Length: 375
Ligand SMILES: *Cc1c(COP(=O)(O)O)cnc(C)c1O
Image (tube, rainbow, N blue to C red; front, side, top):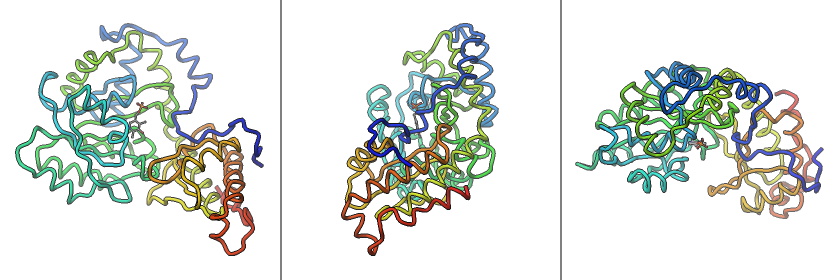
């Protein structure tokens, strides 16, 4: 049962970035062979970049402090030498890049974003995309696709969807960038290799610090030439790190944990099943779910819902789309799922609007714990 009212948050579902390095990762950091990556001779970084390039099927990869920086470098390295004029960037309106990176892209990259409406599965509306791409002689264009789709409850887009966007971008001479911070989740959910999902892309941003659990790190992947340009730009931005082997070592361990993401997806499925049984709760149900559950409770704003759940020791992220976000990761198990479901049931029981949505049902009655037994 939830330690209702204990006030000390014990279950943190805000993001899979909340994963912390375990003992093996810390030991790997302590024992990492290092050089100086600014001089190009850190052996652990070299191995990491090779492994990620192999994983995504690209010629080369570049370690960046964050995927945010990988996404900033991505359009700037797309066309010509590092000093070339900035391209414009067409990207889904409900993406990490549109929400959290547009200001940095504009300020530090001179990149203007053209947001595109997205379908419920996260794919940009292809008609709108075509219209934007065919508008005459603008600057060179980068088209970005996000997989998994952050604001579409972590939906995984399959290779066919990715190829459709890539084909459209390439028809108009655009560079196709894949923001695959959680591409590993997509690959595991779809049962395909990450390289299959990355194949149509000219560049891919990949994160080792989400569900894979490394403390920090993004990788920007693409052709050898592309990555060489990105490497120079990374230096300009102050993103080159000297003894970065200490960061690369836990990231290498993280790469070995791809199959573990399936457990996070099972936890999320059980959580979705349980939360849905709470009176007044409505879920966003993506076609290909991964490790996220987005829920809303009748009668409460996302901020109010998050605040009340925090009072029961459960942390979630309130979103501008009307939902609160639960992200499952390696720190969660079925006991945590039960506690989260019980916490939301306890919150719902205090909200008249939530109680009204069920015909005299007792709040919390029929809470589906069966889905948790199955999972
Ligand atoms: C987390 C995330 C990023 C940024 O990654 P950081 O390493 O936290 O900077 C970019 N894009 C998407 C889709 C993400 O989920």
